[in-house]
Amino acid sequence: MTLKAVSAAVDPYGLMVMGHTFNKVLIGTDAHWWTIFTQSAEYINAVENPVDTWSKRILNEIADRLDATVHFPSDGPPYAPFIAWALDTGRFWQSPTGMMIHDRAGLMISIRGALEFTHEFKDASEGSRPCDACTDRPCVAACPVGALSAETPYDVPACKAYLDTPAGVQCMTRGCHVRRACPVSQSFDRSDAQTAFHMKAFHR
Image (tube, rainbow, N blue to C red):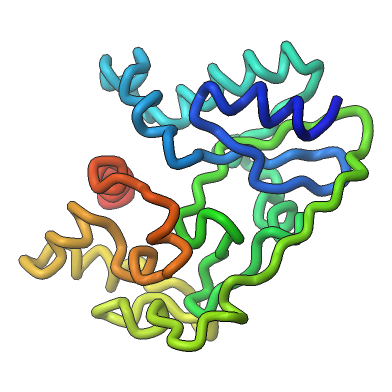
């Protein structure tokens, strides 16, 4: 099994290989995922936890075809160490906001699962940290309530309280100011409809 074959297997579902570490390949949503997901039974029928349900159905099918084992971030406790796996790939880093950043998706990261194989991949999985070449770092000052910082834990109550205000409507409909401020995120082309869907789920 090659990474090229894994990529070809997941691409029709709007998914992409976001990196690999040893024998595990991290699978996340690509820019065209939303169009595919909104045509699924999980979305149309508004099932509970539609994204997780869809991810498990699709990635289990792919894992069966590729003779792999699949792990999901939502399974636990105990939870699989997805953050450690991601950082080990050489394609994810901590951003100045404390959130992880990906060399292609920026701050618009959505890892749906990890495929584990019985062999290690020898292909290089190294990118360059986008923040190192970003002189302005607009993400640092983008949060209206300072909820995100590399030095302090994510202030979820402050974030959600802001979302309940008139000014927070833009975050709810277009997405987190911090994520949208990242130049790499802007080039990843996530639709406002997808972002609003995720924000609604987060704010429940």
